Image (cartoon, rainbow, N blue to C red; front, top):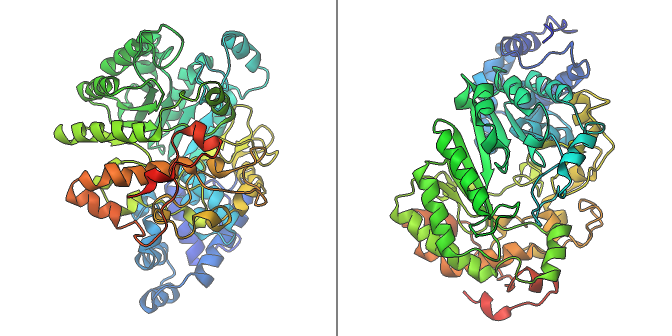
Length: 526
């Protein structure tokens, strides 16, 4: 790794600049000589901050008299506590360049893009996968080994990926997610993990894997994270338990792989992701629950699939490919009851129904988007780089610009990507049909993709945005069957975010009915 030095400031006599620069230099978070265009961003951001951000009288006095970093930032922190609840670290030792830009830059688009990188760098290292999941937005078929060989010609190399991770650490990113496709179909993946996890400024390196290849290469994983086990976070997937031996997330062989992995890595932070499927039963959920309990997983998330083209095609062939919404809520009710009886030994999250955050601070369950954007927090929360170097605003949508990290460094790519229509959106643009809804404060309109009637590019303002009918159905049914039965503390937090005078959205039977717009009005009475 090259040793890079900070270039001198043009306004070196200005104590504010000098103090800030010294601070960043100590934290090895930004290298202006490596990213020349960062200088102007930094200057513009600081000037805008000093001139336009309202601070109380005492802090204004501190700014005029002392002109040092700590009164400036501490003053802003004291005056903007609500905004801080969205993620800016109150501990100045964690304050980085990308933090600064994401909150203080005068351009909303730059703030949004920087905020995505501040939250997490999401590296889709390959589009190749050895599994066949109908709900997947990066699906490939049986010839995955051939595709993986061909992918070497077009996808980012391990060296390319290391460069991106290095540049992100210089800018102050702290969290890296390595995903795919199936990341372990990419040759050299363990070398990439070892490189990332040994960067001191990174707080967490995540790996998302279906586990099929990982189960055979556990020794390589242990070697790559040795000495940094506490910084590593492994995400695995399982969607059910069946007697099938197919290459999917419900087979017996897949279950055995998951059990082998989590039992072999007792000191690793492990989360498990599941998708609701038409074949899932409570007996399967209960068995999976006790596997999570036995091996002390960190979090189990059970989600409803998004409306991607492959899922829509599967539902048209088999309307029962996904379960009925009422079935999902009834199964969730039993699972939540079991979880409570077991005294909640791990975190469980069932989006639109129940979240572990109900036991934590109310700020964490708020869906208020950063900068009034509908996709934060959601799939648009992180800075996503595709397998060929393209910048993806959302995992469910094609890129909105031709920006590519193969031809630009990371900061240039971040700035160029703000030309995407994604950054023009506000919540009001996509939530006109949700105004006055009972659950407006809870879901903020939910997924832009699932509200869209034009899948060619979902972020155009001209798109005819409707309602996220999955959210409408699950939220309404959850209020009827689940929330009133929760503990007092959880009920209080949930019902505080319900507009009791708001209208009740229509409830649908399942995705098939939802797609054909068959409303089941009788079931929306609470």
